[in-house]
Image (cartoon, rainbow, N blue to C red):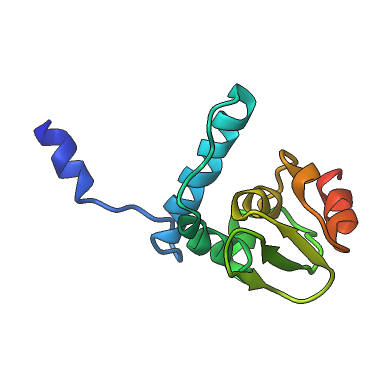
Length: 124
């Protein structure tokens, strides 16, 4: 227990990233595991804001987002959050986060004029 407490105080982020990087990893990998197992995926929606902000940033190309993602306007349906310009893609923050990171899971839950371009990118 003492070793665990010592490690709690240490925060590790990849170079050039802040606390949003490990949060994004934890949220995405949690969804990666929970969705196929049919486990509940609900998390406080506000936790996804720093993750989506990171995934929509230029820094995301350094390891979080595969190349070639189309320019889109991401619009959350479960929170007052949006980012970007271009054709609109709408969905929950969790579903947007999955798609923005290059994952196809829950793609069918996204709507908007940008959904076909997003689907084409994810099908690559």
